[in-house]
Length: 144
Image (cartoon, rainbow, N blue to C red; front, side, top):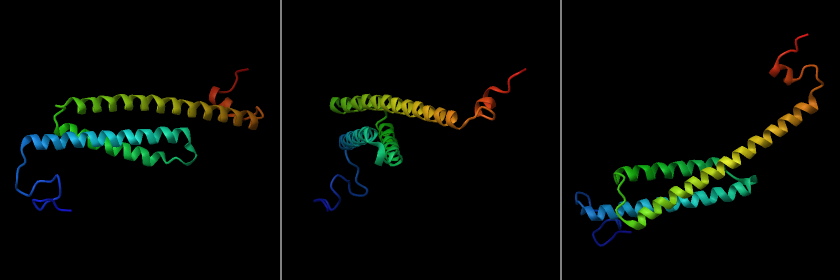
């Protein structure tokens, strides 16, 4: 849909420079939007960790990485300056949410590692008759 000036809403006409404040406002709005989208992906990831049977973690990681890359690019354009308090608070909240997400993922991966070790040990114990076990390969032959 075209706006009154014959362009898409929020987009300047070709060759027309917008005032610095308008560009800054659009930049801050884009940063907030990306922060919201990343927050949604984090919530979705948290829900999928609770019910992993049909989870597509690859798609989540790809979306989260893409959004983080875009946010990083916008922050470069903003030169690290976030001039308004609401945007600054949004970015700070996102940083806290990302740190909590990292802790959750670390605990999840630690649990997966521990469970896989338990399963591996159980398989090893049930299949080994002691003659040619993988334990001998790990510790080497006994000296007589």
